[in-house]
Every structure is written in structure tokens, then in C-alpha cells.
Image 1 (cartoon, each protein chain N blue to C red):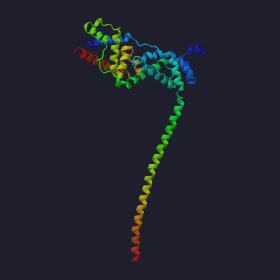
Image 2 (image 1 turned 180 degrees about the vertical axis):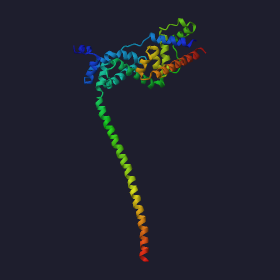
Image 3 (image 1 turned 90 degrees about the vertical axis):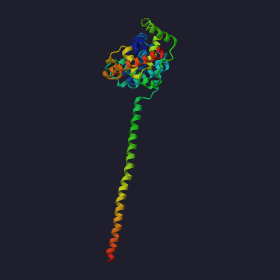
Image 4 (image 1 turned 60 degrees about the vertical axis):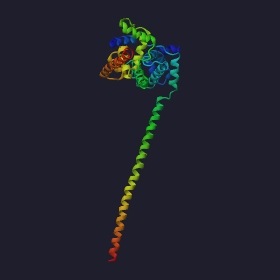
Length: 99
Length: 197
């Protein structure tokens, strides 16, 4: 079987039989009914903007709530070391006062 | 009377009216270009419900993106770009269900192939069997191959036009056309092996 000839023959068959351009009855009426029932694109824009603002606010809150405990733990570390130092030095002070 | 006046308006006037908020001015555009869109969609989808879905999707996109139409080229060209891209999306969404073999050929299709093997010049390319065979063959191709074969080989469009319709570069169109022809020959080789070996 000559495949390239078969290919040419079948493509010629496709060229000779263009598809039908028939439009179903009242198609444009149905399309218009759907299009006018669709929300206005500007409403979509307003919704998408609001959602983006909401997402940005959520990210900001998440960042603040994750940074604040870290800051607090740093402060706690300082107070702990100061406490240790004071208690050691206090014993040294007591030792000096006894002598 | 008002309807006939509306029909006489140019595409540009109708589009301007739609963009000003008069959605009803879109209807003459739908009525004017739907036959062209149905004809295009029927090249890529077999079932009439799928064809209708494709055309509806094209009109939905056209309505929503109408503000991006700058009027530099005719509205029909802009619409056909949307149509071709929507058909390509349809092919990609349905590529899992595309045909994989030629085992279930009908009797007329088998007869046409037998005729071709016996005397290629006597196998008529205007017969229904040949048309059904080529539909089967196209249904076996990958989405990109089917699109490029349809536009280049069947609709005889130049590479530059295909590039504008698909959004692919001219070089990519040529590469995809080369691969598509090879894919088509591979499918035909399967037929030859399944039937005659």
C-alpha cells in the first residue's frame, strides 16, 4: 500500500467535503440570553480586587503573628540571662558582705 | 424597522454600541458570524452538542474580551483567532478520549480501502467512506497535529496566517506541521499493518 498516496487521497477527501455551516434554530437568541444573564465583567473585577485585598491583609496578619512571638522569645532570653547574672552576682555580694 | 437598521450597521458601530453598554447590539454579530464559527467547530468536534458548546464558548469569550478588540484588523479575524484557540483547547481537553485504532471500520470504509489497495486511482475521494476515514484519521492525531493539518493541509492556509490564528511562531508552525505529517503517516502505517499484514 502506498501510504503517501493514501494520505494525499484522504486529505483531498477532507478538502472536498467542507463542514456544514448550519446554525441551530434560534441559536443567537439563546446566546444573548446567556450573555445578558452573565454578571457584568466590572463586577468580576471588583470581586477579584476585593479578594486580592483580603489575601494581602491575611498575609500581613500571618506575618505579624509569626514575628511577634519570635520577638517576645528574644526578650525572654535577655531577661533570663540577666536573672542568672543577678542571682550569681547576688551570692558574690553576700560573700563580700560576710568577709 | 429598528432591527433592519441595526442589521445595516457596520461591525465597528455594533461593537462600539456594545462597549457603551447596549448588549443587544451584540446579537447581529452573533447572527452574522455564527455560520462561520459552526463550520470551524465542526472540523474539530463530531457530536453536535460539542460543536454547540464550542461556539457558545467562543461567543462568551468574545463578549467578555470585546474591550480588547482594537479595531486594527476586521472583527472576523479577531473572532476566528478566538475560535481556533477555543477549538484547540477543546481538543486538548478531550485528547484522552481520542481514537487509538482503526479496528472498527464500517463496511463502506473497508470497501474503500480494498478499492484503494487494488486500484488507487479508482478510489474516489468524494465518497462518504473516504470522508469518514479521514475523520477517523484526524481523530487519532494529537491536538496540535490535528489543528495544524486541518489549517495547513485541509483549509490551505499559509503559515503566516496559521501563526496569527494559533499564536505560535512561524517556525513552530513549520515544526509542528512536519511532526503532524509524520504522525499521520504513522497512523496510516497502523492501518496497513492491522488490515493487510
